[in-house]
Length: 343
Ligand code: NAD
Ligand code: UD1
Image (cartoon, rainbow, N blue to C red; front, side, top):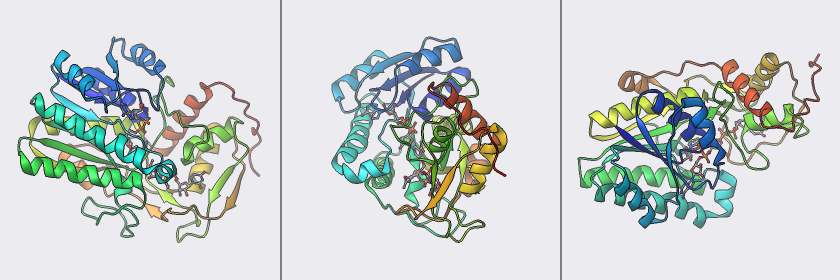
């Protein structure tokens, strides 16, 4: 069975490709390397021992996407390709709407032309907006606070409308919480832009001496230590979640939505302390004002994924941070200046 993985060279896509190959699927990757490195393809070869067919194509190029479907007998699609930086989406909304939404419309049109109606889509917990009833279930009212979030919300609606128009479509909308970590081999992981926006890549770069210190965005939230609480999930667990969702779309029709998280919340201070414990490298930090748009607490109710996908995340916070650090150390330019533990 052949699965087209759009964005398969990216952070979550590459880990999912490994799981797909190891489960016996044929994989075709489509990625234009807008936010990834073609070197990932070599690493995937090293990890899986398989030559993986891949196309350097922009999903906005409909003719080229058609060619991929003509040249391969695709059974289903896992659609990761998209831009994901919240701040950039506020600065460049048209770029985000075009890259994320137009490309998905093109993908669905081509799928329809080729009779392929099974898709797993990367949504995000960001669609819960500023919801304050925790834990977040799939029925929590939705909202968005930035163009990136709107692209996810709009695309979820587009998939629902598509199924209403033709009930042969089978769609899994996966709402990821906070994916972190890297493959246990240390060969693939997350490549953030110059200065990371997200907490764990920022911490690993501080630990590596690439950044001077962590800025903790507020310690006056209504949480156990005042810092923001999130549901961090190991990217390998997340990748396995895609396999379970794929099983479901291959055997069902309809549109199903699933939270993929651990169901546990950890604060920024928990992350700093656990990182120091598992690596022996301490993280200098200062507390600054809250980041605009941040919520105090976000973690998933994972009951639905457990019941319907028979999936639960198995790796813990220590695994996530150990693997993130292993990956960071392989990125070179690592000075590790802070070996003394905090007293
Ligand atoms: P990523 O940037 O590492 O991977 C996305 C991949 O898509 C990249 O390799 C990029 O080159 C490719 N791509 C982007 N636009 C493309 C286009 N027009 N044509 C072809 N390829 C294109 O991101 P990721 O962290 O792996 O995220 C994957 C998906 O999951 C994204 O849709 C993202 O919005 C969503 N998501 C990510 C997170 C997260 O924290 N990482 C959380 C929630 C949802
Ligand atoms: C971010 C995105 C969100 C996306 C999610 C998962 C923003 C505003 N939101 O959310 O759309 O779905 O990632 O990828 O970017 N923190 C610090 N210092 C830092 C970085 C983060 O204290 O330098 C804190 C934050 O305030 C938060 C926690 O760490 O409490 C996690 O932050 P982050 O990794 O950016 O994830 P989210 O805020 O959940």
